[in-house]
Length: 402
Image (cartoon, rainbow, N blue to C red):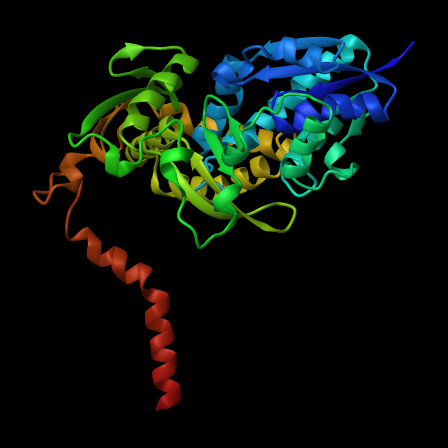
């Protein structure tokens, strides 16, 4: 009986090459598995394409709801941004994709899982760490670390030599990754940091800010325990809320970043990311946190956010530390409930009001017309005690100088 290999299949350039390559170099039956995390029309026609290029079976696993609920929202609640900018759209999808590949491999009795991640990138780590955590017995095949193909041009030639249709245009062969949360772009002019991105041909989810409407648009988002549940007064499912907010924020030029990031494998790479809904939701939940979290909790959450982002970026989702950080986030967001209003205008997000039944803002205390809860006289004793170490140190210096 022939062994089986499960291939993470997208129908893009790399995985289109991998099916015939596996057949030529391994005596395995190839099972192509596409995990739908919100690629949209990219999944259309993939079954015929996979079978026609040599796969014996094709799976389409629709996991958008699971993606948003179990990966996107926990990352949002954590406030995790890699290197202060990247909202981790690709990073958090990879563990879920790997999890589903493992499930299919177990169901089919496969001995190996194959992925199309390059040997220079982060995705190989994200896929393989998750596979090791969930199914350490499975073999992992990573063609980019084995084959003689060195570039996307080589991959195109490989397909042309075998009369297999090439799934990209040579003048638009950006390396893209799309899901419900974001769209990433790498390659072509982006590989030269001195060049400005050609947004007119690059962007797919967003309008360039200068071409966004001249009139601002307001959005209102209601959260319950850190989870967005309503958009502009409508109760929506997680998938529907993100999809609709992507449309609204995208047309207003919100959520485009151009970053020269540090890959986990040790090199810098440049990418342009579109995350319209995510950018708005990150701003909205932070506005609510400022109202509902005390100073110490908010400060520690900012520290934790950096570590959470590092874990997500480096593929360490299935780890006790990440799970522990998520438990901490769930705890502190038990009172992060309320409504946030924002104004979107040409790439900008402008706060326009926030309300919460758990607000820690007390107008009686904060107002210049102080109420009974706060006495100006109390400040003197507080400052004397708080400043006592400074005063003692100054007295010591004076005595030495004297």
